[in-house]
Length: 155
Length: 117
Image 1 (cartoon, rainbow over the protein chains, first blue to last red):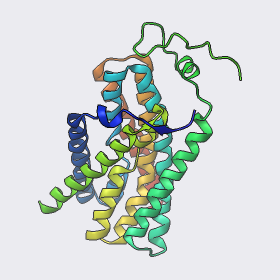
Image 2 (image 1 turned 180 degrees about the horizontal axis):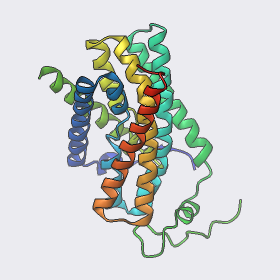
Image 3 (image 1 turned 60 degrees about the vertical axis):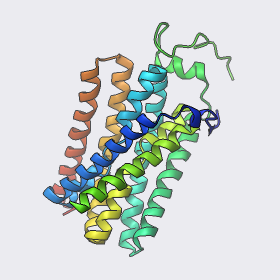
């Protein structure tokens, strides 16, 4: 399966959901700053990898599209989370090299994106809907269950 | 107060941006990548660099690796609660507890080993 653009995304976008994510993201970033102020930059650094978007995203997907879809989203998020190490290491290297803040943040974000996408292609590029759900153990009657689960022809 | 308000706006904007990116791509495993994007890190690091300088930011990024371990554990815990179809309270509290436990433990190990001051 190749990544692509979700054609109906703009039409289905919910302003309320986006507002919740804005609110939660803002609050978590403020909390990270307060932690750093109170306990020093080491604790503040841990808070940089705080799950800001994930809880809301998984809850909404679970409620709107079913558990199987939420499991899929979480499987992708696992790789995105691993790629945060690429962000942290690149930012550390860039700061030690004396690069500017803009370059540091750009390089670190690019490192996250590249490592996340490469890992996704390695892990998920052969995914098919039936195989995914079979692997996740989604049972008949579960939200998101597909009748063709487990009937994927061998490659 | 002004800095907190700025943090709130920048953090909210970056999280919303990654959220929108995730909405516009498919399949779900690919959009899931953006749910674990460094959204808090980008906003917070930018402000730390502006107000406290590169030294504090470097400590931040080194210790972010502990948070990363916690984040990976958080997602694994989310997968566990989703597969087991646990109730709302368990599905919410277990991942957060796992994040705190793993991130805190790794931070303690890193600090006591002397790798970060």
